[in-house]
Each structure stands twice: as structure tokens, then as C-alpha cells.
Length: 128
Ligand SMILES: [Cu+2]
Image 1: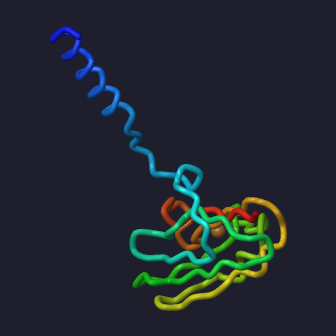
Image 2: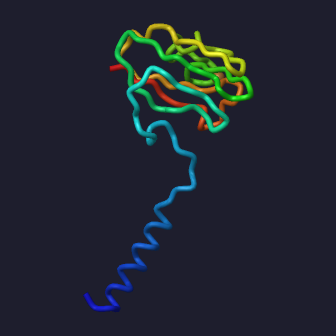
Image 3: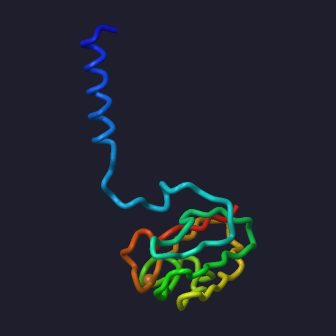
């Protein structure tokens, strides 16, 4: 490779890295899927936001934030996709609560009903 080619390659790489960085907020679909039945909420949002659980088990939501959250099923504001999630509902700081048994094979979206447009408080539960 000539020095000129090398320089060009480096420049092209730099440009593609810069342009490849999307400024959009990550959606649950592109966050890594984690096998766990526990989702913890802090000031930076829900974590993990994309969980896989065994069919028939529940998910525990823990509010470790200093403000309350209201975890409900998608879609907002009807919450009728996976009603089992609505059992979590309002969580004061320090509170935790489980979903109902997730008995259907499916993907369930959730969000904080009091902050419905805050992407880092949205996520999905996939039963397997
Ligand atoms: Cu809602």
C-alpha cells in the first residue's frame, strides 16, 4: 500500500466512524439482550432494557432511583399488550415489585407511564 493509499484509507475510516455514530437514543431492540428476571431502575434508566426470561416466570422491577416510576405495558397509554407488566405499576424510590407470570411466548414492551417518551425507561421482555 502506498503512503497515499494508506492516508486515504485512514481518512475514509475516520469519516465512516464519524458518520456511523447515530445521534438517536438507543431503542430496546439494539441494546444487548440479557438473560435475567431483574430490571433495576436508576437515574440513568432501566437496566437491562432488553431481557429474556423463561416462559411462565416473572420480572422483578427495582426502583433504585431517587424519584418514582410507573412501569406499565406498551402501548402507551392503553397498556394492553402484556397486562401482566401492569402489576408492577407505581414504584416509589426504593420500592420493587414483580410482574405477573409471563405465560405467553412473545415480546412485551414496557415503559414508564409517567415518562412515556423517555427512551431509557423503555424496554422489552422476551419470553422463551
Ligand atoms: Cu403509559
